[in-house]
Image 1 (cartoon, rainbow, N blue to C red):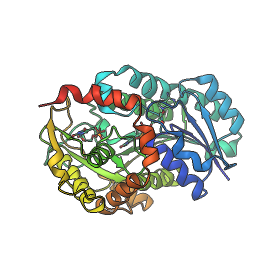
Image 2: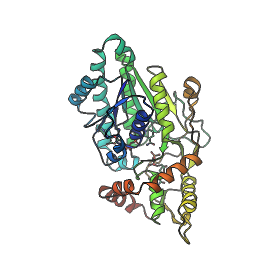
Image 3: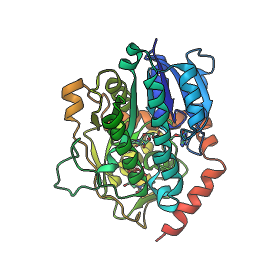
Image 4: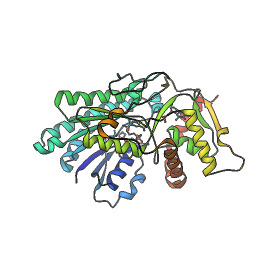
Length: 356
Ligand code: NAD
Ligand code: TYD
């Protein structure tokens, strides 16, 4: 069986990818993660006795460690999920975004290039470096603009988006300059089980369960294109196996929603699955001060991956949201663990100045 070096595999999407990769026997996995606040190894506890899974704590920017891991495990692919990912944090403190997303990706590329150049011809042909990126690199759309395509020019607006764009450009350069067999995927907003509750959907679910205010930035009419996480992971695997090297693939849910609509759907779902006498959770919605530079709309045109690789999302927003809400209701221990300590500090820092 092949082996993947997955970076950032203790985070939301990486962990879901690893669980799928092991249960569907896509590959053995070495998971390299530095374990920031956004990670949670408890998510992967079910793999602790799996001989095809190996965890290493470390930084994608540590070139010696990466060189050692590549030599030791001889992976067929490096899949780079590792990143600082939260836009609001990138506004309050951009430095770690540059360090991990730009410099870290550069170090990972360098180590991968050195490893790849020394491989036997057959392993060399098979090797892939897959960069997991975001639709946010394309900037903001007006309501009448067509959705982002793979050839839409990059126009990032937040420090997070700019750092991901920088990393994507490096990946592109390593293909064009050195021939490193790279692939890039640009995906829209993910949601689903195991997402850290600083992002809109899990934050809203958990606040609504506690009867707390549901903060909606600005007028709530910013639009995102939501994709259920397992659909993203399947797309990543498909691109890895069948994508054309040097190419990028957009991945999206064909599911544009305003933030207000998302929050209202979560409220309705919780009112029916976990009713509390006299409480209509939509009454908890609180419009708060907007995010600076808040992108108005993202939308992904995913015709390329559909036509070339036959990918389609399996979940629609109703089915995906139902599964997500169920998961948070049924995993109170996971929820309590991630909400302790540093999480509370972040909630005070981010929301204290938004009131009114
Ligand atoms: P996440 O924040 O949940 O997890 C990121 C993981 O990376 C964490 O486990 C963290 O510990 C790890 N990490 C951070 N810095 C590291 C470093 N220097 N070395 C090793 N590990 C490090 O993120 P996510 O939502 O799972 O996103 C994963 C990837 O997918 C990111 O590259 C992100 O840009 C991209 N993406 C996310 C979304 C989304 O909606 N969440 C959408 C499109 C693309
Ligand atoms: P988020 O989950 O942070 O993802 P991204 O900024 O990467 O798209 O936010 C999704 C949308 O929800 C975004 O338009 C900002 C908005 N939002 C709120 O209205 N309230 C909140 O408390 C958060 C975290 C986000």
